Length: 503
Image 1 (spheres, rainbow, N blue to C red):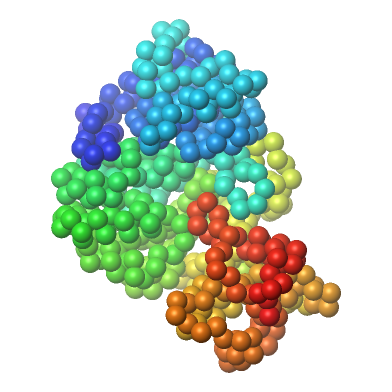
Image 2 (cartoon, rainbow, N blue to C red):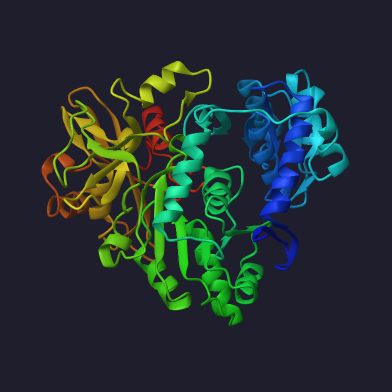
């Protein structure tokens, strides 16, 4: 009879609610209806925002022995069609409107000529969603059965479909909330999108396996969220750093009391010290980081509630439960020494089965000894705390020596004239690769010449790390999530696009 799921509407008020018994009842109804329509193992796409029906379909699909394919509701027709075709989806379950956009026209056009075109179902139409529930039977499944495919948003090439299994999704997300002492009676506010593992895996499965309450944010409006925190008093708030910052700013601007929050959890890279200070000021608690990837269901490392100081602001915590984390050499895959930089790798029960219909990419990511290579560079201290220092593919190999852009960029940012900087490797006949530095001038600053910049960096770093090319830009090419596309800068340099601005 405990509350399992509560719907937070766009205006910040609570809509529908389900106890555990009620959610089980509706999930089983959905599971039987899905089983009546689809044979075991059928892949069904779901495209929608954060709504309770999304959760019902997620749970019901697993009970019916189906595989859920998650689709970002902001995808274009072309992107949706790619996912439907690559996954081999036999149906699309969609929410009619998400953030003012009608999804049915997109789904209809994307599904033409695909197997999914026979079953296009509105999840908010319960008569349609539960149709045939009396004709279907729930199916027995096994722990390592694939139950979900999520698509990674890479910075190059087409997204890859990550095959995730039940044991990895359920156990690892139980474990991360066990680390944070979540239990029955506590409420977790979730603004993470359900089509990401942070939403459907960490929040839905992590919260429900602990008997806690999930407060599902349907539309993220920071003022509405802040006021809902004041009224509903959730003990845990999740969100990416931009969301948390927005809630902090909204609480300050409106004078809203958000001190009921006992833990703030965020996914991604290390939390900036200033954001942690702001969280301490407004919530009274620091931000706990969880780091991972879709390929690992998603947790690899996480902070502890007892962490303080640099462990909170300069690391991504310690390895998750029941898994191994290692820092390995990008050149020979040997284990690095304590505090030595290498690639962050993990091995454990929560690892993906592989990439859908892409054995080459799977073999490139998971080595013969079962280690999954994240592509992130980092170090591990003697106490097992991990730091992120960059990306492996951004590593520059100059004359056989590994150079790390993050180190060069950090040194250059000390120069008062540089507002933003990115370093990338470009081809060189003698060295194989050399360093090209791309910079944006700080407002009001006078542009330094190349000689001054070389002298500045030589005071801080060894000669081989000194950039050979200096390029000034007004803006950087960015990914959809706002990260600088260094590969695009390198490609443009090779094409000669920066001939007039390069030193």
